[in-house]
Length: 170
Image (tube, rainbow, N blue to C red):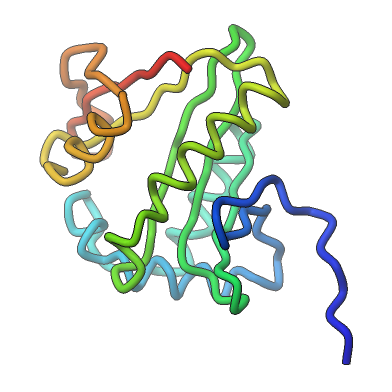
């Protein structure tokens, strides 16, 4: 049987496809969340749940964002990317998660570089902002390697976490 060509792909990053998560794909998205509980353990709720996924999707919609899945060439969802584009040529990266077994393979870097190109070409974005929890040492190192810098003092986020705002001009 011939596979139908996807028309909802936002962009590709190496062999990965980034596209909005459909209602039918929420099950594979919860599996990604379960595979990143090491990351989730840094925050107020360490265990993945359907409620967590639904809340993240609702937050994305409220921010007029794009809540996307990251799929490999085998059609397996390996991550989540959530971002929104603001009015002042700025984008906010709400979430970039790669399942544990797919980390350290260059996917985060490839996704971010391709997201930057997509945002610049499609939306005229020149600045990306992201919040990174102060206790996420690996995340801070990654974002700094990718050219982001801490742009403000740590802030209490209202959910019990404290985060740096990080920013990059693209």
